[in-house]
Length: 316
Ligand code: CP
Image (cartoon, rainbow, N blue to C red; front, side, top):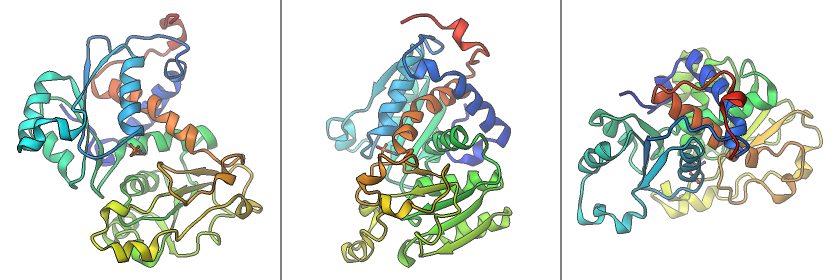
């Protein structure tokens, strides 16, 4: 059964349908209604790299819809430390579960897992490759704020070289006709093959090192952490650490409806002074991981989200 490995696995129409389902599921995600659409289904959480939001929001999504979750848990307590291969691990979990969420440090690992799995694999991040389930919640958040995904001006800033969230998101935004401004230090530029691919697909892409000069006419500013763990050379990391630090004082002339997003965790790229501004959207964005993943799991398992969730759902 097909899963979600990159955003190429979904058409624009499918994306919009999933976002519409997610919108209707908001009261369930907030715990105001119980709707056991996934009763009897089991999600396998396989996280070979650290995660807070992706792992926990998948788990919350499943449980809010009446499903169950089994976790690989800490790798140190799994048979991975005895030398079990990813292939063999997938063969086991494939038999234990109905759908798998997986994060792995190796780019391409999610596709490798899907190639030998019976159940859908949801790529929760494969090295510096893709993070499409994050893109689904990012698109949900952008549409929630602006009412549309079409034709927005989006600044993607920080570590565009290793940041898998911005790789997946920039592909999706291009398909909805957004203008993209890539703001990064030279060392952390978006890979040239991705920029070329986006341009071949009609994207209007501007590359700059000047973040503050780019934000005043933006609809969305998407900040990212510099991915220290992906640098082979510590000195190279030190040269770009702290390159961008967005402070509330920098927001005086931005559009009133502009939103600041971040996949989190943040380090120092968004100062705490931004949190209380009308532009800060990152904690709501993290919450949206629950509702976007609820709708995605339903879609991949062929479970229909009712049109009238309010009347189908029961009290908790
Ligand atoms: N956004 C995100 O992937 O966060 P985690 O690393 O905590 O899952």
